[in-house]
Amino acid sequence: MERQYIKPGFYSDGSPLDRVHYLECKIILKPDGFTSANALRDYRTTVREAANQIGVTYSAAGMERLQPAVREIRFLDTPDFRLYNNGFILRQRVRYVDGFPLGSPEIVFKFRHPDLQTAAEHDVRPKFDIKHKTKFKAEALPLRDRVGGGRMLYSHNVQFGLNEAPEGDRKSLMNLGYAFPCLEALRQSEMDRVELVNQAVVEEVLLDLAMLGFGKGVSAKCNVALWRMRGDHAPLVGEFAFQARFNRADALHDKAIERARQFFRLLQIIDEERVLLGTTKTGAVYRLSGNPLQCHE
Image (tube, rainbow, N blue to C red; front, side):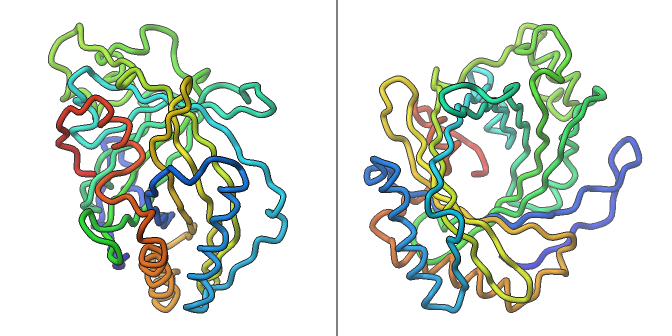
């Protein structure tokens, strides 16, 4: 969570490089205990304990009776995981309300890298003219081999509805390269295609827990989630996360950043037995086949 800045630069169309506007902290958890909505709600106790110890304000007002949200998530990649091994993630997700999908599936295309400048210089915007939203996040994760620390990934992504995408063969890597020029270098032949990663359809069950206040006007909503396989409901991973949005990096006061860092590390220590090191939610899906990965995650 060290403060970093992007060197000035421009994309090919003359637009200035995107700036980070989100700080998201994630702790991957063993999924075994998340067997019901109440089990997700019970995680509030752990979060509240960590918050109280270091002076982070905690408020679950209006969230006590929330029901978990459910989304279906599918990852797409080449059979040799060429996208993921080069830092790219392509996924489709749809939210369900009362058992029915809500609107068109959402496409999320992102580039994730531990170096801020490298992440900023990858232009993830679609080439075709559609309604879309870009997000640039600084993501804090625990260290790969022990609790109580942190490492950073920078996630540069774009989101849009599947109904906005042009018609045609949407699984052709050549067509994806036309849509996202940063993918063109990965294409090895005109026949390259993407497919469902490990034939896995993931069901995400997510519950908002509370608002956290780190002082100096910095607040963040926190949530807990379970990822499981759709069909047999085999659990994959759990995750606790909180996210703060800001307009400028220097708008985050040093004291607020330090308090967020302390909270992130303390929560790992308090819940050490449940922390799952060395992976991300996406990584857990890609590792289902047991194939070795070379991704920066």
